[in-house]
Image 1 (cartoon, rainbow over the protein chains, first blue to last red):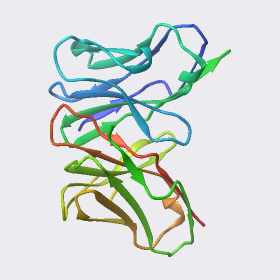
Image 2 (cartoon, chains in turn purple, yellow; image 1 turned 90 degrees about the vertical axis):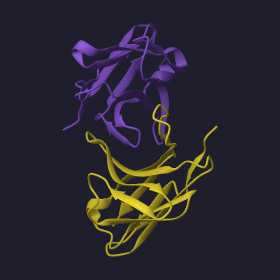
Image 3 (cartoon, chains in turn purple, green; image 1 turned 180 degrees about the vertical axis):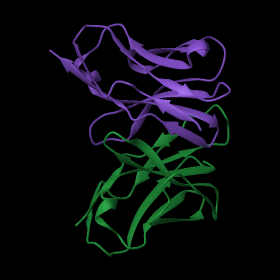
Image 4 (cartoon, rainbow over the protein chains, first blue to last red; image 1 turned 120 degrees about the vertical axis):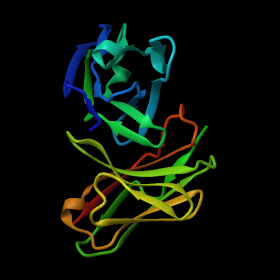
Length: 112
Length: 113
């Protein structure tokens, strides 16, 4: 069965520090991969997506993610975190165009 | 930009009531989805629809039904609300293009008393 694992439930980083959020998936072929962000009380906003080609993808708000086929991972990174990045982040995989599987989310806190 | 609108941001209902959650999208998307979101569990798919009057069960359909009479509107129905259905409900839509994401509404926080 397909699954998505975000091993870190909570992460706290200092403003200006770098960030890496982990995501691993279980699926036979390479699915479509996404990262979403959810601010408190809001819906999910797409940060970036990967379908094929260059394994390093750029997204909005200065985020990037790297797909590593050998590790079945799609980790999200940002070189310098801003206080406004505090939110919950969800990784999602889509083995089919209309079937998404979401991880359980990682809550990011940013220390001043 | 795609706009997915959920009719209520907050809703309080009583146990046993029939509850309707409405979702409208303005981009002529074929697919629409209902998820519930609970802390530590991420998003779990309740139902989805890939065409008018078509529906498919997701991972947790028990206690819910859906209706899609028009392409732009997808309703989630709690036939007899129970306290364990207190949750955040998110609606999403997408096209049939394989490389397109789902677009989400702002969610409805539903409390069943």
